Length: 325
Image (tube, rainbow, N blue to C red; front, side, top):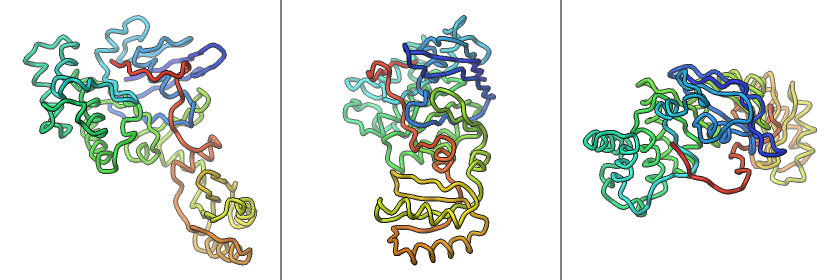
């Protein structure tokens, strides 16, 4: 459904995307993850025909972003990082305008607006001005706008940023319903558990290049087996904890300085945990946490990129644009 072929994007001396190639089948959720500045949003803008690549090309449903951008736009819905809704209109009016931009007959635009409002639990607030909406309601309305055209491909750039946990879970459920109805979704997110929960395949990019690709379980295999993790109360103890855990595990000891956490892959969960507890106690190191866990996608990022976090790169001109569709 989406074919990305050697796409590169240069902003002067900055190479935001560097020869990226991806194939995304129909009816798949593809998670696009990477550390800060990886190039995720830049790549999304290329696919959505909002940005011309320096090199390479992409196809959506067989249509070229260069030769037939209007056909590409007719197939996609895009919800960007920032909710692009009009505060001075009601929720219903926002969606009706999108329908008119798709050149839908008025009756059909109204019907699709009502359908999107109902699916996103916004019917009761449909005739309120959007300036009275909460952040979560605005985000849902923005997603609804991307659905009015009934896109075959839905591109979501960090769709749940800033949402409360309950609203995030509701949105996840809604996205699963869309996939069950045949949609293909490209999802960038700063929440690694979101990709773990929703994505069929995950592509990791760093410094504009693809550095890993696979299912969540396949990516977690980069880390190894179970992990013993220890979190010292004092930052000054990180190096000591790292040295002690190196004798407990069977792989590379990784240090997350932001979260004050040290982890190491182990063969035997119980034996390794007991040994770690003993060594740390004998060294009089105070801990806020000690345990054993399966690798998470956070661990995958730390193992593959050496970095933590997935918030998106700034715009080259440092301006936050709200363009879409």
